[in-house]
Amino acid sequence: MRYKVKHVTEYTYQDPVSLCHNRVCLTPLNLPQHTCISSQIKIQPPPDDLTYRKDFFGNTVLFFSSYTDHDHLEIVSESEVNLEGRPNADRALDSPVLWKDMQQRLASQDDELFDIIQYTLPSTYIPYSEEIKKFSEDCFAEDATLWSACHALMQKIYKNIEFKPGFTTINTPVEFVVKAKKGVCQDFAHLMISCLRNMGLAARYVSGYIETLPPPGKEKLVGSDASHAWVSVYFPSIGWVEFDPTNNLLPTYNHITVAFGRDYHDVAPIKGIVFSSGKQNLSVKVDVTRLD
Image (cartoon, rainbow, N blue to C red; front, side, top):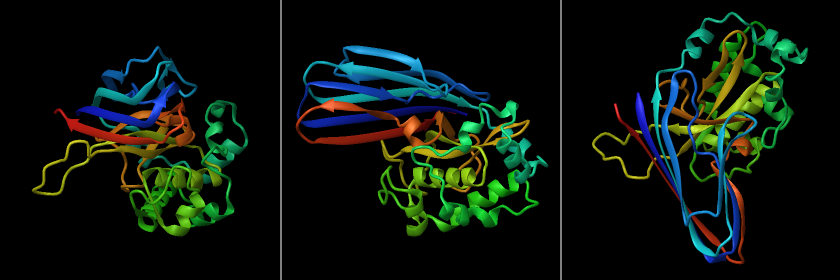
């Protein structure tokens, strides 16, 4: 399945910006069965400095700076990606590994899991929390497999949390999301990751895009798609297996991966600093188009 993704971000400033430094994470990853055929990022006005790097997690990140006055900034990312499914999900379904055994292996700091243990620890948006642990405990029966526990947790979050655009910000604590029973895709992902880590398991945040379809008989609006977030859980002898609690499904042919991290803080699409005295307005438009 091939897709074209166009992500347009535009800032307009009340007063001129004299200096800005930005970090952009919008280039899809190359993974098994997930190929980034092409990708480019265009910036207006053209920056004075620009460089691409790989971050700690292996994501492609663009850094740029502008030293001349400007009253607007436009960042346009265009990519073409080919998806061939996610076979790890099928392998995990048949895995006999118990979640409790995986928890114990991670707690013992097994040398084979050295790079995985970091995803069991608290991070910027993922706290240790008795409240979150209590929310998730009924999904983790003593004899449950890792697969069945993760699947049950995904379903519980989907059934208990209402998707409500604009209800939260990225800084909203996961405990508030549980109490309010509302949130956006970042909240669903952060909550599932927090539940898993509080149970001693390894989970990471996935940012990207998902193909959306208009209601029957309606045309898809230009710019109506959005960035998406879901969860990846580590399974021994298999690797990372993905779950989408916002939609209660396993990502396959319509989830386009841009980056992995501990939480949103590691993989924010765009972040930076500007030197200006006025307010700013932000506009984001995303289009995900199936090519075949």
